[in-house]
Amino acid sequence: MTENKDVFKQTVSSLNISGNLDTPEGSLDAIMQAAVCEDKIGWGNSTRLLVLTTDAGFHMAGDGKLGSIFFPNDCKCHMGKDMTYSKSDELDYPSVGQVARKLSENNIQTIFAKLTKIIPRSEVGKLSGDSKNVVDLIEKAYRSLSSKVTVTHEDLPDHITATYTSDCSNGTQPSTEGTCDNVGVDQEVEFKVTLMAKECFGTKSFYIVAPGFQERMKVTVTTQCECDCGNTLINHEYCNSHGNTTCAICSCEGGYAGQKCECKLGDKAESELKMACQRDNGTECSGLGDCVCGECQCHTSEDGKTIYGTHCECDDRSCAVYQNKLCGGNGQCDCGTCKCNPDFEGSTCQCKKSTEACRMAKDRSVCSGRGKCECNRCQCQEGYKPPFCEECPGCSSPCPNLTSCIECLRFATGVYSKNCTESCPHIEYYQTATEEAPKGGTLESSGWSCKERDTNNCWMTFTIKQLDGFNKYKAWIRSERECPEPPAIGPIIGGVFAGVALIGIILLLIIIGIIRAQERREWKNFEQSRKAEEWRPNNEIFKTATTTVKNPLHEGD
Image (cartoon, rainbow, N blue to C red):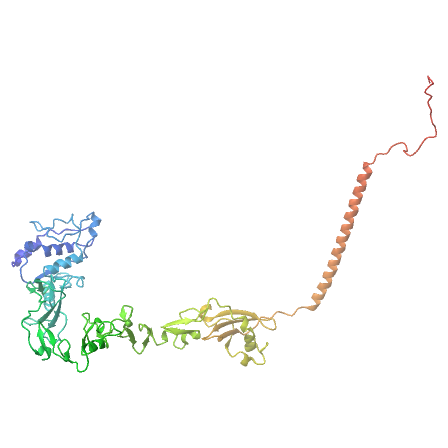
C-alpha cells in the first residue's frame, strides 16, 4: 500500500497477468491473500476497502481437483517477495465461506459483484468499459458501506447472552437489533448492550466490535452469586415492616407470611394458604410460580412463554404444531388447546370452515353431492374417489337402467310413455344430431356412451352424464333410432319348402347310397366264397352196386 498514486499506477501496470484455459478466474485466491497478508499488503488501522474488478466468474473450492490439486486452502498468507501467490499449484481455491470469514476477521469491506448476500459488508458496482467511472463507483460504494453501523461481539463465552438496543437518533424508533442505517457524517448513535449470565463464573472477557472499523472494546464481566450478608435488620421495609431480613430473606412476625411478609394470615394458618396453591395435592403452583397469600404468581419464562392459570398450569406454547406453526398459525394457544380464528377449525386450526376447496367449481355442489367436506377435503361415498367425488371407476354403467326413460323422453314410446314426466324426473335430456356430448367432453367428464334396444327392438344411441348427487343425469339423445327392416314372408316360406325338399332329397340319396354299399359288400363276399370252393369228379354220396369179396385161402389170381 502506498499514498503515491504514481508508484501505485506503475506497480499495477507492471504486474504479470496470468491466463486460464477456462473462463472462471482465481478472484477468490486474490481476495484471500489480500485479506490474510496484512503485513505484506500494508493495511493500516483506518477503514479498509478492497476493490475487485473482473469481467468473468471465479473458481471456488473443489475446482482444483480438475488439476489434481486435492489439498484444501489453509487460509494463510503465501505471498513471496515478488508479491506473487506461491501455492497456486498446491492448494485448492478457497470457498466463499472462507473468504467471508477472513474478510470479517480483518475488517475489510469489499466492492464485489454477486456475493453481497454471502460476504458481509460488501457492495456491488458495475464498471464501465473504459473504467472512467471507477472513482465514482468506489466513492458511492464507500458511502453506502460507511452509512450502516452494526455492533456485534467476538469471543463471547457460552454461558453469557448479549442483546443490543439501538437508538439511531435519525427519526427512527429504537430497535432491538444492533444496527443503524443511513448514518450521516458526525452523527452520533447509541447502542445499549444487555448481558445475561446463565450460571455463576469468575472473570470473563469478550470484545464488542463494529465491522468495518478497526476499534474494538474489551468487556470484562464477573458475576455476584452470593449475598454480602451483614447484620439482621429489624422490621425492615423490605419485609413490609412485618419481619426481620437477613441476607434478603424475611423472617416474618406472628400473623404474617410470604416471601416479604405481605400476607396477613388472620384466622388462617400458613399451611392452608400453601394448600390453596396446590392442584390435586401436587407441586405448589405446578413448580412454575410462587405462592403469595394463597394465590399463585406465575413466573415469566426465558423463551417468552406466558405461564398463567390458577395454579400456573397453563401456558401459551404447549399446543400442537401444524406446518411448523403453533396452532397452524390460525389460532391462539390457550392452556394446551387451540382457540381457532373464526374461519378455521380442527385440533390445530388446520382446517378451513369454508367448503370452497371441496367444490369443483363455484356453481357445483360440495363434493359433487356424493360426500362430506371435512378439513378442506372430500370424504366420498363408497366407490367415488377424491378430490371431488366426481368419478366412480368401479361403478357399473347406468345405461341399461335408464333405457325406458330415454325411450319415453325422446320417442314417447315404451313402458313409461303414459307417465314419462312423473316416472323420469331425474333425467334432463337434449336432442342431438349425434350421440356425442358437448364439444370437448370425455368419458370421465361427460359420462357414458350408451347403445340400448327399446321395446320396438330399435337401437337407441345416447350419452349420459351423472349430475351432482345420486340418480341425477343429463342425457344427449340421438334424434334417430336404428330399427331393423321387417322380414319378407314369401322368400321365407319358399326358402322353408326348398329347404325341406332339399333335405328330403339328401336323405333319399343317403339311404340309396347305404343300400348300394351294403349290396356291394355282399356280392364281394359271395365272389370270394365261390372262388374258394374245390369240385371233385365223383359224387361222394353215390355207392356202386358191385361188391368184391376176396378168399383168403385162395392163392393166385
